[in-house]
Length: 189
Ligand SMILES: Nc1ncnc2c1ncn2[C@@H]1O[C@H](COP(=O)(O)OP(=O)(O)OP(=O)(O)O)[C@@H](O)[C@H]1O
Ligand SMILES: [Mg+2]
Image (cartoon, rainbow, N blue to C red):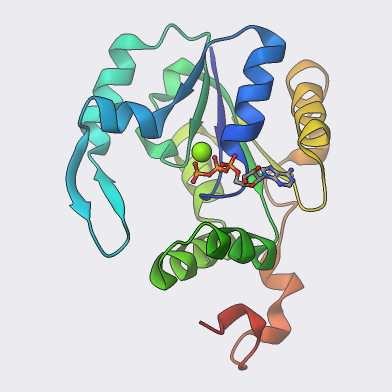
């Protein structure tokens, strides 16, 4: 069964998933590349500088082509056929750190803001739980951890025990509640 490395854009999916694929010898699949290559999009959003994914067509393609041995890198977890996935590991990152990373990438302000909000509100985690089922979803706070450390935690979840990483462990709203409704760092765009 395929292993999914998920998370908001910029959290480190590609970096970690590639290393994990190297270590395990499993094939690596970047769904963003598949979407572009196979044209599984309905339009290009020029404001956000991103493709709008045709989730149904992407899911149909994955149903047919996945061998169930892959490590899949994506933030569009709803496109995954649940029957082909063993676990989804959602990487999390402190929203303020994420914001700096996305600004450094040169993302448009709106795109930075929407992605930071999605991270705060657990959007990818919720989507993973809804499409794959809570018992097969884990979340790992990568803040302050090296790529090697994150990969080590994922290996532990996959081979031993993932009890420390059940959904619900990360709570950005609690950490940053004092900024909400105020003119603070988090919402200053
Ligand atoms: N644990 C980490 N510590 C520090 N920097 C990291 C870590 N993981 C990734 N990075 C850096 O963060 C940036 C974003 O990483 P990466 O491209 O892997 O994210 P992504 O989740 O695949 O993003 P996207 O969804 O846009 O493809 C890269 O510059 C990468 O080197
Ligand atoms: Mg990536």
